[in-house]
Length: 120
Length: 109
Image 1 (spheres, rainbow over the protein chains, first blue to last red):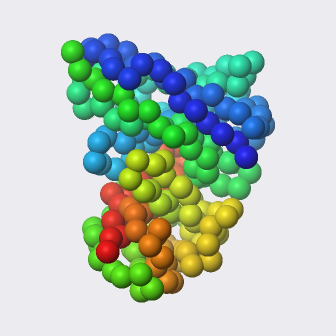
Image 2 (cartoon, rainbow over the protein chains, first blue to last red; image 1 turned 135 degrees about the vertical axis):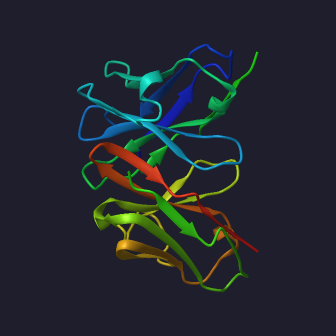
Image 3 (cartoon, rainbow over the protein chains, first blue to last red; image 1 turned 90 degrees about the vertical axis):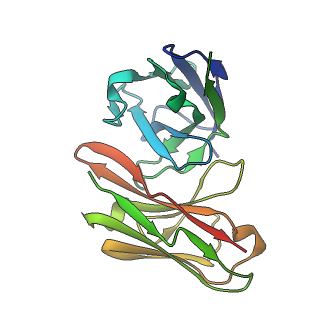
């Protein structure tokens, strides 16, 4: 069973950059799967941020594309999220998740999530 | 861009009752790219159904998915206390690549 764990600062300043890392354990990061970030503002619904393949290919939500970078480090079995030009609207629980491409385009394994607050 | 609408917003039921949750897409979508998730307070979402009707690993057969085109349904045959949660539908579009979630249906007592 693949397990994912997010890590990174919980408090970031407006106009700054959010940087989170997702560690993958219990499986390979370099087979058929895509790896994704999803966020959820407090009390609200889910918003997909983007995805990355082990080759480094990425897709981003058009609404965030100008501010987002997702990268992958196969040697450490981690993938990362950078989101810049932060505002209070970026305050959310950020989840990393796996897309099991061998069976479909959905998110089958999720990290526990980490709340990131944008505030001065 | 596909927009997903879920109804009702809140469903108030009792244990043992049947729950029927609706997800409607703004245009016809492939069933292969439609999934349902359950989320409990303080927890990450958990996939229940993918490909519109395939149960994910370890999911009780009380959960079933159906539908095609623009209308999809998640049915919980007999509600257990642990089923009271928020349920989201999700679609994946390939041009451009984009995951879209519905706003959710809360199932409460």
